[in-house]
Image 1 (spheres, one colour):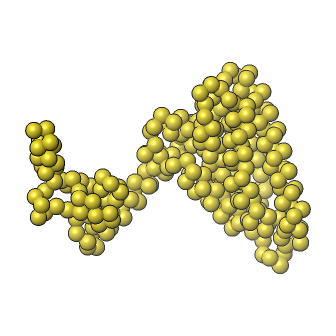
Image 2 (cartoon, one colour):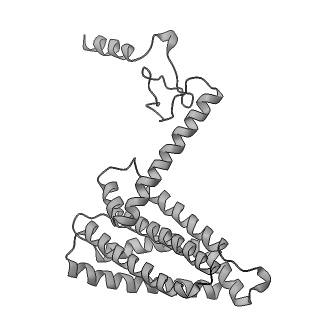
Image 3 (cartoon, helix red, strand yellow):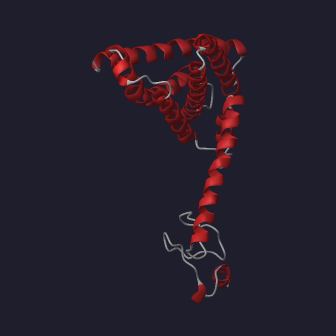
Length: 258
């Protein structure tokens, strides 16, 4: 009796056999008027025409667009927020951490390669070398440094019940902030250059540096919940080792790429 009831229930979930709809991707029979396939997740499309094509495009675009706005705000103003939201399971409304890291790094290195770049015939040999280093080697270096930063976090902030995932997520979000702030700096610096105000760059670098340090300390406090004193001494050791890693890696690459 129970088997018959389940079979009847299953039949009621779908249209009549002659009208059953299948997913165009995996051919799974769809449940009623489902908007998405319950097997592969592909959206169901009613008819293939120009209107439905543009409707799907606008839906995907504005979904991603809204994720950008929901992610960028906390990225700048709420240190550690996106990491905790991810850990709490609230993920779908934000850009995934790895994608956010890659997206922000691409924008930063694109600006770095395009903004205020002198003609090739005006570059000295040293300038040409460092331009090539920043455009070619530095992006690859940060893909290595980000997980190394996560391991340093795990070394200093190994509070109970904290898996390496927490440190990795925090590293991705912090570096996404670093690249985003760097992009803003490059834009403002380029604007200064157009008006011969490059002397303001030093002030700008100090302001952005102070912001990033304060941001990192606040994020560490929020995510790892150590005492202020415990966070500060760990922060200092973290920065010393991380800067040594950056400096050592840069020097090593400079030597082998000559």
